Structures are given as C-alpha cells and as structure tokens.
Image (cartoon, rainbow, N blue to C red):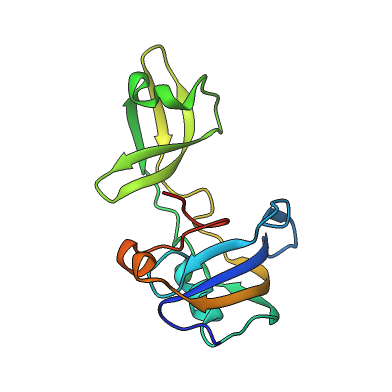
Length: 161
C-alpha cells in the first residue's frame, strides 16, 4: 500500500541539522513513530515527502524552514505566571515547556525565571532552521474509522485512549 490520505504510517526517523548534528531519533524507542497521513500530524514538508512511498522505502529528505517550523519571529516572548507552569516542575532556563495558546498546545522555551513569572520564547525551538530527515518506512495500512474520526493514529507509537 502506498502512503496517501487516511493511511496509517509507521516509520523510523533520524532528524539532523544541515551540518549533520543529530537533533532527535525515533530509534531509541521500541516502536516506530506512527501517524495518520493527511491530517496535519507532521510538518508539511515531511508529510509531502512521505506521500506515495511504501513500506520498506528508505530515503533522506531536507525540509526547508518554511515547510518545517517556519521562520523565527523576533519578539515572540511572553511573560507567564509560574502557577500556570506548575506541571513542568522546577524550571530552568532553556527548558522546553508545553503551553496553551490561541493556536492550541505548543512548545515554548524558558528564557528567564523570576519570583512569580517566567519569560517564554514562543518560537518553536526548531523555527528558522532547515531540517534533514533520514526515513525508514516500516509499515503502511488503512486507517480505522475511529482513527479517521479522531484525526490521529492509535496504538503503539501513536495515541492511546
């Protein structure tokens, strides 16, 4: 089966910057990454690169900044009360935290910590960067009705309910 809208894809990846420095890999987990194709579960450039591929395919793709996390936007710093970040535990500068915004849940970087507030950079940590992925597609299958309805893949490597 080829990767198309409503296909569930299991794949391993290694993400590096353009200099080859590893940023992240799925290979440290027992299960490959799982996602529902065509439902915006990946950055646009990676989803486009996966379109039409099949189980067993291996390839490298470089995703331009505009099709990854976009450009860095200067001044995207927000001051947040520490009580809103209580789930993150003891904070440190440079730490990644999940915050709720008008656009939903997003990752932010702690820039400064005060007595009652923290300054967060709301740019994604990979904003402003082109990214290189080494991909190995392990499996492709048709999505279930529940997966399509929920907009994401279920099971090991995906979302569990």
